[in-house]
Each structure stands twice: as structure tokens, then as C-alpha cells.
Length: 365
View 1: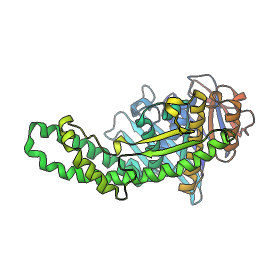
View 2 (view 1 turned 180 degrees about the vertical axis):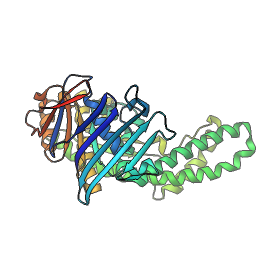
View 3 (view 1 turned 60 degrees about the vertical axis):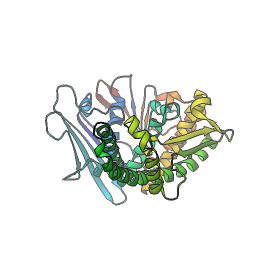
View 4 (view 1 turned 60 degrees about the horizontal axis):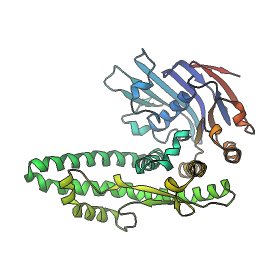
């Protein structure tokens, strides 16, 4: 897949911008806080339907404007495609997706049209922070590659919220207790879909990340990923989840919240058998994240049948020469969008197009 055009209208600090990226590497350089990351954010919006920096879509609309629009045109094996995301402050529908000339009925229809992998300094949180960050990492990738997973995730969130609300109601009105069975069944059924997809994905990523990490470290370190779930090893995940919910019912009623399920899952990341979050140095954690991202890039290509785009947000300056060299070698294989403050960070990379960014204005140099 190749992005042939990216257009921004009233998006963040861009009044209007049209970018025709190189088929290889497109670089956005300039001082900090000028709008470089906003370009990658616009691409990410068209990949997943949301920003990677904020959950508040209104923040993406330029100050004083009512509407923002991002349009991406791509060339793929089956022809050319165009998707657009329109954000509004004033319309009843705050976010609209257009696929070609057709307005999508659901945001999820956007998924899979533009496939991308983003690597930013904040990705260190995947290793350093708690389980929620690792679930988010996995869920975003699976949603992009498997839209059915995205819809299952939405159902799981709604069902979990409904069950938690019912647990609070039961505390006030015990006669509602029999209705809990229905929500247990629904939560177990959708949870099984999520668990099975996550388990498969982690197993695949583990192989690819281990290989990438051995290359990064010259064979000195071994990176392992393991899916951690209350029912990860069950042959019948649905039955196992249903049983877990039944056993936890008394505790759930006491605490008025659901204590078991896929919303408690994690991915264990270890280096040479030791937990990376606790025992790895900052440099080792950076290597682990880079290995994860390289694995994600390769897996996305295998899963979708199209090479994804790679977005690198000011990460080159964070890497030592060896990690930087390893990443630059991968850059040559896919279409890449890079932000940096100093072009020397990209020494050795084939820079196809370079844009200078200042105060939301782009100038090709």
C-alpha cells in the first residue's frame, strides 16, 4: 500500500495543506511545536478513526473553526482508494467517515483501508506501564487488521458496563439477581472472541519480536511475549469464562464490579526470563519496544497482504547508533513518514521528500 496524497483542512494548526509523499521516505523537519506530529496524527486518524494523542476529537479542529477534514488517497493492489474523516463542533454527528463517494454508516468501516504502524517516544509505556497500555497496544493493532475484532471490542465494553451497572442495581434491589445470567452469557461469548484473537496475535508477535530482538542485540538477549489471561490456556474459552464469572459472582456483588474477564488481560514481556517492566534498563526497554514495533510492522503486512505505512514520530534521536541503523534498514522496505528536528538523525536513510514545517506551514526543500 502507498499513500499518494494527504490533505488537511482546518486540522490542528493547519488551515490547509496538501502533501504528496514519496513512495519511500517522507521527512518533516523543523523546530519543536510547529506541527510535525500533527501530520502523523492526521494519518493515524485515517488508519484507526481516532487520534493517538487525545480522546477529544474537538481538539483536532483548528481553533475558531467548526469543521476539520483529513483525506488520504492510496494506491493498493486492487486499485486506488480514498478515505476521509470529517470532524464537526456543530453537527449532531461529530465524526463522519467517507469511503470514496460513500458516507460510512459506522466508524468501523474505515478500518483496513489505510494500514499503518506508529512508533513514538510514548510507546515506551507499553513496557514501562501497567496492563492497560499493553491491552491498548494489542487492541489497536487487531482492530486495524480485523474489523470484526473492533466490533467485538465495542460489544465487550458495552456489555461490561451494563453488567457493572446491574451489579450496583442488585445491591439496591436483590430481585434483579436472576437477570445477571443473561449478561454473564453475553460477556463470556464476546470475551471468548477477544481472548482467542489476542492469544493468536500474541503468539505470532512473540515469534517476530524475538527474531527482531536477537538481531538488535547481536544475539545477546532473548525477548519473549506471553499472553496472560485467566482463561488463556482453556480449550473452550467461552465455557471457562462463564465458569469464572459464576465463581466470582459473590465477590462481584460485594464489590459491585466485574472482577474477572478479558478486561484484566495482560502481555508479559520478559528479557532473558526477567520482567522487562521491572528489571530491564532504559536502553533494554527501548530495544524491546523497537522489537515490538518491527514485529508489528511485519505482522501487519502478513495479515493484510499489503505493506503498511510506517510513521516515526521523533524517535531517531532517542535511539543509539545500532538501533537507529537497524530501524533505517527497515525503512527502505516500506513507505515511511518521519518527523525530526535534525536531518542528521536520518543519516544513511534514503530521503525521498523533505518538508520544512513552521507554524503549520509546509515548504518542500
